[in-house]
Length: 158
Image 1: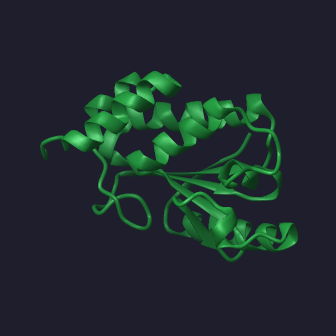
Image 2: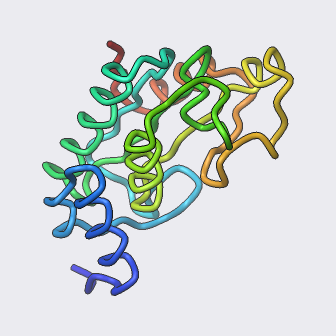
């Protein structure tokens, strides 16, 4: 097991206070394009296609619970499209509570991947400049989910 990086520890502690993610302090992430350097035993992709507070809060809470339970042994992707893409807007064009935005940012800093649908972006007239820095643009959000499933990701949708 690798020692916990001090900067990562500070981010995790901040995430705990901001989003109720206290248990993250025991986990470590390896950051790459898809989340982890090493192959994780568990992989999950969350569909995020709504903008309502309770929906976004539920998705992010569940993501945090998976990280708390599995630590480094889970790779998590949040696939954002339709109205759900606004969680990745900088700034969002729909009202999203600051707490939700902070939780998403904290999870991204930890290593959770947030994918933005290029088709949704085109329909909104968005470019990369309209997104938070941690968002990864994929051409088609649903195709991204399908390809992740083909790579062994479990799919979860509310």
